[in-house]
Image 1 (cartoon, rainbow, N blue to C red):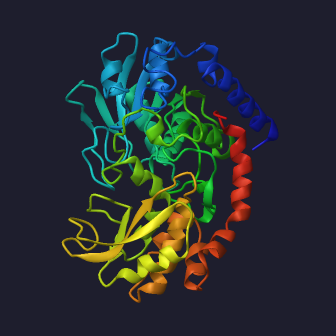
Image 2 (cartoon, one colour):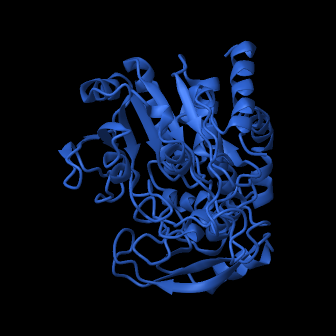
Image 3 (cartoon, rainbow, N blue to C red):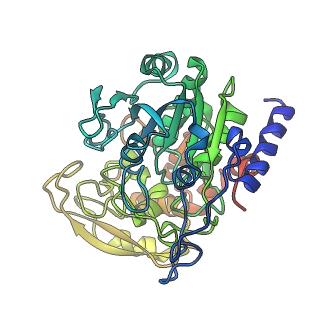
Length: 429
């Protein structure tokens, strides 16, 4: 990656900060319309009202999409503030030539569980052809875009802020494929539900690249999807795709999702609330162990446990006095996934100060204390933990008996370098 290309993209991002979009979106003069009464600024309940990238695109009369044959990569989170799906809205508007929908993991309408998709079909509500992107990349995905007949691919999916949440890599793969197929790529921005003040956790070693981490970014990347798209284009894509982004208005980096005034639609079946998203960048690491990560309960990723675990785990975790969080001894019986139908013991996380809470440090601390307090602790045989953390470092240090903050110390150099790189692509200050 040359300095000149980085500089050019950084300059485009700065221009977007003034105009509300990057690339041709800025040239199109996309400017936020005045907020409706009771919807702008701070709401009557002290909730900040955010307008998403789609809201601003629509308010501008879809000028950015004028004359283009459009396909949309989206899922159930692609909704307006009044919970209409953007595909339904655009399909009913003559100003948009919407030709296709591209469904990711879990599908466009969200009918599939983890690791599944809806396949190729026609959407019953709109009659639009729906193409399956899950598991496709490179030339195979480019061929899907070509077959659809679109010339512009639009991405609008709610992310949750963690490197191993696959929708950002769906976006990455679609960017690569759009360039191969000669298509333009537009990203409609949405909030990072964790806020996005800082990046946290280990940076992926490229030797461990998978669909839960294609490129070396931090475990909690601290970016929005539009900012990630700019970073991917500027740092990782061999050939940049013609990229345009439409940023939000009214969003601040310190805002958690509850401060946005936007409705939360679960981005996947086991991400039911913004509180789930808050802990997920750390507690998802338990997917790499023989403990339940809470799938099959009403509190996935907030409840963790296994048969034989007792109060000693919560006591050990609380003794660390981690910032912003306490742990409660808990018992639960998952209705599916690990320990289905069995009562297991463990902990429930209670985040009392989200501003101080570090989900990645907390996740590592829970791994350390689980291993120390329960003799049955084991990693998954396939070393899935290494794919989630992005290297062997966390696993080997935990096995060696390291303190959680010693483990965190091992990733600080790589994290500092990522934070510096990340800073060039931030759209919100």
